[in-house]
Length: 428
Ligand code: GLY
Image (cartoon, helix red, strand yellow):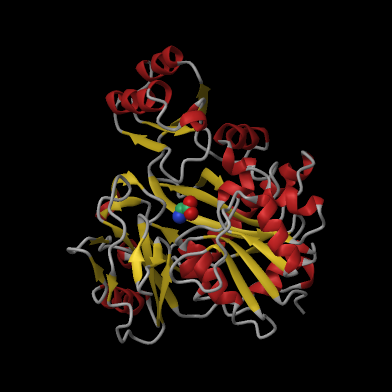
């Protein structure tokens, strides 16, 4: 039995819209507020995600359970700030959020607790970083230490690309303070998956399997983005592989946190590489929150009541609940972005086709949208919409999602989306 009638969701993405959509299915919920929300969410409160004082005042006045979507407020201690005042909030505290907000911390943590991850070195001096690249084979991944909205990872195929990435971070200071230190790690070939669990620090509840598509262009080409599409389940994540990931990665992570005296509650998302030859899972990164757009694909498949799990996480009673139940159907989410994303793009284009007659089980979650003076929906960001569909199989989910995408457009054909979301799973 959930203990709150009012919910405050912090964030403005498709992740937050889909979390709210799922939570609203609990009949005991009276209000779902979003701060700041987007053009698709109702009851938006114009409070910034880092304005803790006003967020707390609102949550207190409205007796809200607060749910934090994005990493930034977690990394600067929103959970600590709410808990100091006895306000209920879902998400890890600032210390635990370091698993995402500092790549250096996460790599040292994994080394200490023997959690499989590519080998690495840490640098803050330009000369030393470049010497290291010169002495390497050049196939390297260069990461900024701090948060960079998914854009601080450079997958380099040769020494020249590695040098350019290092200059961008350490000389041009493109990422500001987040790039004061860099991690240089070995490049591992294979297949990337998102393995997400919920934990109250003791019990661990896995989500269904899911895969994101991080690059901007089809066939995983071009720069990284926040994520261009997702699907669930992933056919090659077998029960055996899921068990292996939990025993080699997830459990040692929570044991390690405990040993360090770090309490954890919330979603933990391990971005994994399944190595090409061995299929061994290795951690590329941890995120201390739900994935976006993984969340959109997961929420439409979840048949259990999400809020009961969130409530039990906050109250540290997850052990009282069974594993989450998932629909047998398959889901697929296509992110529609503004042309030019992840670099520069226009905003303020009126989105047409949102009132089209879509197939059953098609859900349009908003991210970078806003309502204009005339009450119509405009684009307002890089990732604009998450067009998500459920189908009896992946092909049907794909057909429904892409049919809906074809009905939506803005500007002078300024919508952009990948055409190959889910196609790797069809080939496997
Ligand atoms: N989809 C990648 C992320 O949420 O970081």
